[in-house]
Image 1 (cartoon, helix red, strand yellow):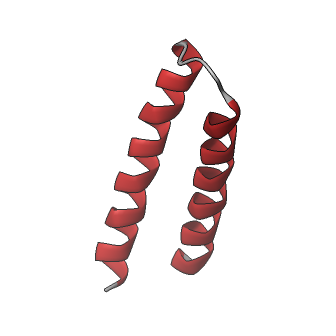
Image 2 (cartoon, rainbow, N blue to C red):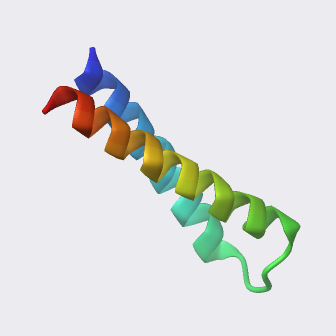
Length: 52
């Protein structure tokens, strides 16, 4: 189950990264995307800690 969660989180993070790369000018959506990316990274770390 945790492997599935990790995969889903990674896919979502990749989607946000590709979305941010497409932006030329940093706007409110890009800032929000960065906040989401940080939250996803923290979630991934928490999942890894629980599974180790």
